[in-house]
Image 1 (cartoon, rainbow, N blue to C red):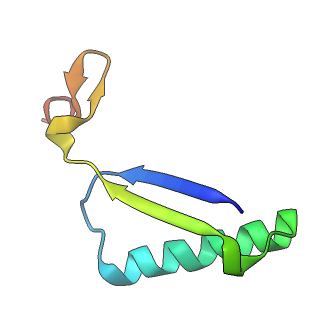
Image 2: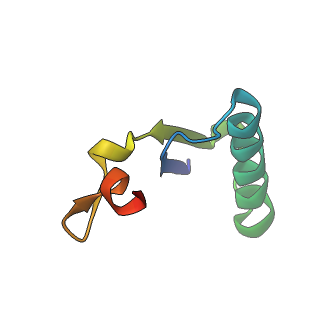
Length: 64
């Protein structure tokens, strides 16, 4: 039972894009690893840029 957890900043993440990501990742695991899509779990977590740090700065700070 594959479990995939994707963490992304929320810019431009529509419901349609998230649905496509879930579908595509599930299909990839089925194709490459022969995993059953019925038992594949894909979680998308949206992390605010103020809550994500890289190199001692938030993503918000790095992008400004």
